[in-house]
Length: 458
View 1 (tube, rainbow, N blue to C red):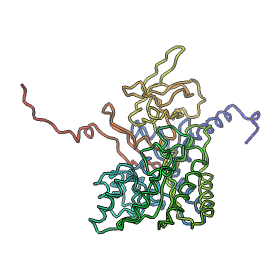
View 2: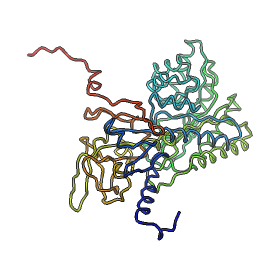
View 3: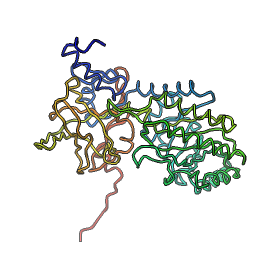
View 4: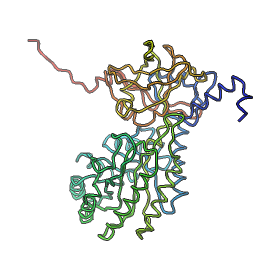
């Protein structure tokens, strides 16, 4: 890089713009003032498919899958698998990509399982998670020949054994346990503490009681232990403590006859939502987990089990970008300037739910330096419908295109039809080509489930 004093004004502007593209997908660039992702001008995408529009960069998805696979191959001496936590976002095309990359798939509902089946995903590579599986969903999973059921509570032990007995089947299972590890993240994203709806607590003895009960049931083949401590976790120490807790429990349970073949500390690694965000690299994250597992097994004098990591956000989040069109400006002197866009809380409820903070860029003015501090507000009838608070942008005018990076996880999967607004289209970009993978909803879709009444006037 040249000395800053030797740069021209144009070079400084180009360098500044490229630095600010760091939360965007790997293939992001600028050309002729426009934001380019996957070799395609994002303004061309919105001209063809409208806004709001979500795009996913195929190169970034594939790269994250391969980084995870390479990391476990390099850092873990035993067998290991990567499973995509599809609750982050799932559609048929994405399930196909995950299958092609050789990853397993986590599902948490009959709907996610159905999408996986529609994509032709091999059922033996699917793990069924969740604390509230219905009996019909468990039956659906067993009939599909799903690979692993992750049992979350006593009721599921009974339901799985009954359903398996009725089918003359024996089901591979993990037990989800709560290691009482407090991950430093939003309170709604903590799932491994004692006061959690998920899993059998270790510290109360409930986890060991569940193991004792399960290994006596002939219809259930208990092969592993699982924990998931939360989401958007930006340090590795909580994962290390989780691994240590799982190994200690597994070593104790092996004295009762448990054959600990598989162990999963879940997922939850954070992604950067801002250029200055500090998060561990995938490689460092995986290395620390693998090291902890090897050392814990040596200390407990047990054979290292197959390690299963379950990334969701860290695999898909950075690949996604939300594109909105500016509708209006509202300048309140001495208070705030609002820039209103045609999306908001219905396609991205995370700022309202988790106080999630994003950055943004004007896709049609991508190489312009920031000119004003604004708040990007959504179109929905809620005061809390704010997508990005206090972000530096080039001056935004009606018709401009706002691009919000880090939009690949937990936005579309949590989206709704609030105010009866149709949900956005989704486009996959790949080296100069764009593929529509989810069409935009129509008004007809909004009434498709309605039933008209034949009411007589009174």
